[in-house]
Amino acid sequence: MKGTKEFWDQRYLNRKMGWDIGEVSSPLKAYIDQLPSKDLKILVPGAGNSYEVAYLYKNGFQDVYALDISEMPLEKFRKEHPDFPVGQLLNIDFFELNEIKFDLILEQTFFCALQPDLREKYARKMQSLLNERGVLAGLLFDFERKDGGPPYGGNIEEYRSLFSRFFKIKKLERAYNSIPPRQGSELFFIFENKTN
Image 1 (cartoon, rainbow, N blue to C red):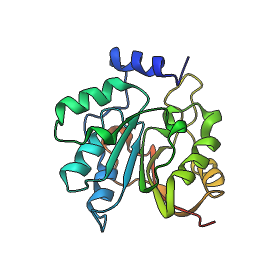
Image 2 (cartoon, rainbow, N blue to C red):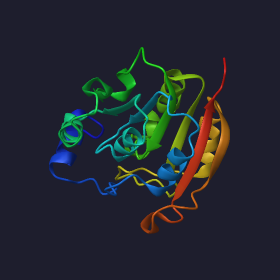
Image 3 (cartoon, one colour):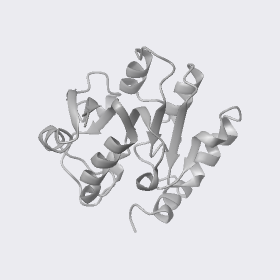
């Protein structure tokens, strides 16, 4: 069944990760490079091969966590980055993560991998995992949903309607620096947690 640990284990085993570009994406790299503090507590959910996590850690962000439902990419990452703290590799279902709060959560193809009926649950969970004024930032696909996903798409109006209930929308616009195959199909966003 789509979305289960077994489903993702099989995708990694068969290397069916069509949206894995083999490196940190250029919009996220640009965003990370301008972050004002290295002291942020950061989560990358659905981290897969964790390129963003590796880039963050290499650039001085020590309090960064990779989360994936499948142990396979996390084990691969651990072998490739033996100095990375094992306790910051979270092999858990995102919706079961509790008791940790983050200053920043980076979204990179996790949202689009979830069944569309989980989107409100995703937004609500993201809000609960962020500190007051914490930020959810990253990329969302901007194309018609495919029933045969993942990945599943969406559009700017749909995203604005969903996320504005939980976050202050600081930015939601076409990514200007996407890699060539994704030009015109990615939205870059910065959402700030609404204070209760």
